[in-house]
Length: 90
Image 1 (tube, helix red, strand yellow):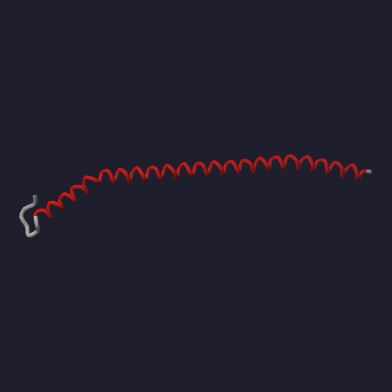
Image 2 (image 1 turned 135 degrees about the vertical axis):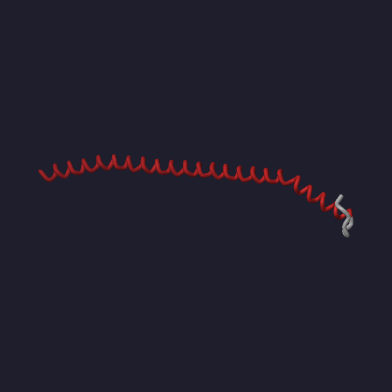
């Protein structure tokens, strides 16, 4: 109990106990905040990794499509040039 004041002793004790409870809860609250922030950061990292993987798959698919298109167009161009030469010579 605090030293005698003009405030009722019961009020002083209630305020003191409330302050002790707040101080007692502080470590648990701070750990809860730490866990929440850590889980949020890990979730963001997982989401970013998933997004990057999807974008790389799309880029790979586009590169493959362009490669195949190039291969087909080379063959077509060669055939066209050969045909033009044959028809032009005749």
